[in-house]
Amino acid sequence: MTWENKVVIVTGAGGGIGRSVAQRFASAGAAVVAVGRTHSKVQDVADEIANAGGRAVAMAADVSSEEDVTRVIGDTYRAFGRIDVMVNNAAVCPQVRLTDMSLTEWNGVITNNLTSVFLFCRGVIPYMLEQGGGAIVNVSSVHALATLDGYSAYSASKAGIVGLTRAIALDYAKNNIRVNAVLPGAVRTPMLESSVKNLDTPRDEIMKQWDQSQPIGRVGQPEEIASVVLFAASPENSFMTGTTLVADGGMTAEL
Image (cartoon, rainbow, N blue to C red; front, side):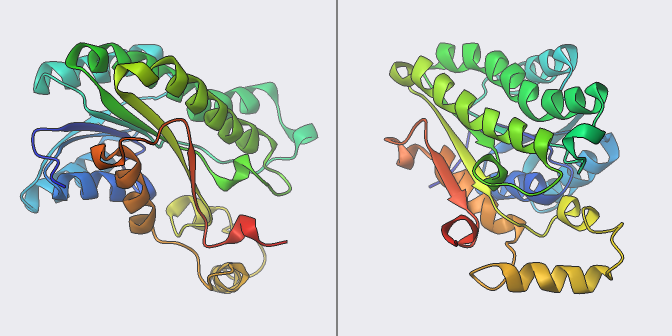
């Protein structure tokens, strides 16, 4: 389908999955608002989209800040007159065991990963109601289903996204607003690579082990998750809301 005349906000768009999601929507014809903490990163993505013939605007924001979220949503509406799709993708992922984690660190993960989803959903839904509908895609993680040592805050935040997605979907199911969650597994992104940078084993060896440990034989690529996000948002997928789409190469299917 074409996304001409549609407007999409993507958080965490400066790299990894968010960058690929922004590029995919833009290549399909949508106007994309690329949101990220570092303006230069999202501006690079907006420039790449523009150079490829698409439409994109870069907006720097702290997604855990109510003031910043309100500004991004308001600026988007003033620039384009509508908001059709909201993709909540921004996240942080420190690896800290529970008893080593400060309350400040815990709150940082929860506000960046979960509260940001609440803020953006709460902010865009009134515009979607006014225009007769829309779609929200919240990027969670397989850590919502099964996790690893040192991921207590991250896992809690991602599981919270799944529960929040279901609740929002039910709140607005009769208003033509669909809300779904995408749960990526191991994907070759800066976040994944940074998670192994402090280990004694060389990075390339660790990444090779990651590939070999996946049932499908490799970690995923950001473009593959972007395809799932577009499917979740597509009006051709009009009967799906309040669900979770797991894209993990078989990781959570394996005992």
